[in-house]
Length: 427
Image (cartoon, rainbow, N blue to C red; front, top):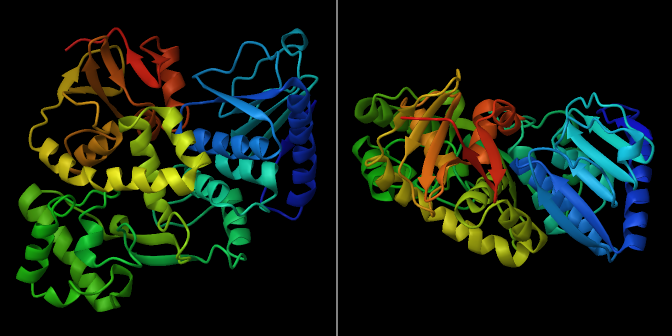
């Protein structure tokens, strides 16, 4: 049994050596057993971390089975990796095979014989990438999985600054000329290094720009009417300081005048990490995280995230294309949505919306929150033939890490086929 805490300090490499030893012991046992079982919590960061483990195990010929649930398995009978669970209350008799657990933050559980627990101040994906590869694997699947997980975690702040172990991993990745990573500070828009202002902002869902997101033509009209036509033919990342300030003011003015929304400049400007390698399958890693979240909601559930990442060069371009078509659909939808508040014995606000399978509750919630129509700690519920359900990704962002499991403990949610089934609520 072993408990290792990784910290961004001088002792990191030594701690990493111990953690990796335990992890590779699990892989060796999995090789003899014929497969490795990965148990993932249903957050985007846990899923991207699971993809890293999948890629590493597959590279040495080990088959992998991934399960997604709100709780860890009650016992361990097969070589396993557990990602995103903090309630590991195993006793000696519960464990019949070696396993490793990764957790973002402090894992207070005490490991039993055969277990290696690894935690630390970093995303699950940073911990998984460090332990699995030592940041020595630069294939697109590994790098894209880590960076998407980092952006979906609390270890990249609103200004785009990487924190904790994620900063350590990023600094090591920047040394690779193969990746050519660059942090651009500008107005937050997708692919700012290759797209013009309106081309970028009109497909950007994070953040949601009222009147601009999903409406390229209105963006053109807005900037032209404010004597900013000269900005239209400039890449977003190439705007000089004065022009950038003017564009920010223009977007904020539209939001205030037409939607009565106060957009704060410090939420609009920040660092955007991009790859300048022409052959790389992903360019903007903020967008990658968002596209993966969209795929997990609108294109096939949590498993779709992992499928995309283990074949990122072939799968991701299709996902990104579908994602970039969604802002226009979202704009149409926002004009029709009428959130209905649900009643329950909770302090959390719950709203029911009429959504279709192709819709993404996370991005709808973000837009409604920007427009002041729902609170931060609120859940978007939608209905199918079996009843009310919610998106794990939206719940995790609204209620912070572990939010889905807290709803389960309150007796109002259970995970089924990648969505949260809600119970005990009424209009």
